[in-house]
Each structure stands twice: as C-alpha cells, then as structure tokens.
Amino acid sequence: MKFVIKLDNCIRQIEHHLLWVLLATIFVILTATVFCRYVLGTPITWTEEFLTMVFTWMVFIGASSALSTHQHIRIDFMLRILPARFDKLAAIAAVFVCLAVFAVLIHFGLKYVHTTWNDLTPMMGVTFGFYTLALPVTSLCAALHVIRICLETGVRTALQSTLEQQNEVEISA
Image (cartoon, rainbow, N blue to C red):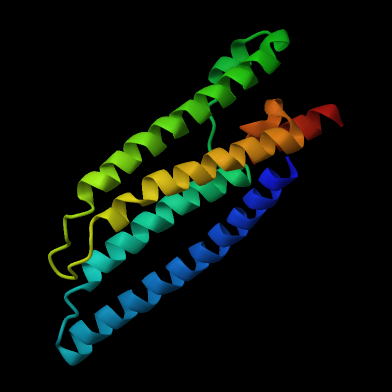
C-alpha cells in the first residue's frame, strides 16, 4: 500500500512539472514561429507537427492530473436519484467501471502504439508512436491515481470531484 502511494505521489509530481514544461514549450515554439514567419519571413516548417505532439501529451497528462486531484468533471445524476443506502455500492461499481475502462484504454492503446510505431511524420520524420503513446501511458497513471485515492480515502470518495467534496463538508457542517 505504501509503495502504491509513494509511486503515485512521484507520478503526480512528474505530471505537474511536465505540464508546466509542455505549456512553456508551446509558448516558446509558437512565439518563435510567429516571429520567424512575420518578422524574418521564413516559416519554421516542423512546428505544427511538434506542437500537435506536445499538445496531445499535455491534454492527456492534464486529464490524468485532474483525476488525481479531484479536479475532473463527474456526472452524478444516477447517484442523486439512488437511495442513500446504495451510495457505497454505486461508488464501488463506479471505481470498477473506471478501472475497467482504463484497462481497455491501456490494452488497445498499446496495440495502437504498435500499429503506428513504424509510421513517420512527414516533416520531422518522427514516429507517430510518440503521439499514440500518450493514451496508454496516461491511462496507466490515471488508474494508479484512482487506486491511490481508494487506498487513502476510501472507495466512496475516489471519484468525487472537488465540488462534490466541498458540498459534503458544507452539508455536514
């Protein structure tokens, strides 16, 4: 249990720092691209491919990171109409479904990476596998986040958003 929590905390730190690095990279490359195109009159041709890859990774890492800090969106319509006695059962079912979805994304994501690994981008000549690797890697990270939250705070709060947690505190106060 402690190993999972330590590993997940390490992954959360890496995600946090990677998001800042990727955002800064996008800013610098876009600024350089605009400067070269409109001031120097010579466009940088590879930037669109590179920025697409960086943005793809940033979106997937951001989704995993949001899940780890309860900043994700959750539709709780069914939970609101269920009687309170089914809360725990619904939470367990939701966690199992969530982990099953991540397992499917990891499995088929790795197949997709294998399929695209030998395909190269036209401008940079980099494998498309770098684009598609974002799906299985971040799905594994997100699954680990859900497991860590279940171990730390319990299944009932594992998939709650921050807004739901705040509402519970206000109701109980």
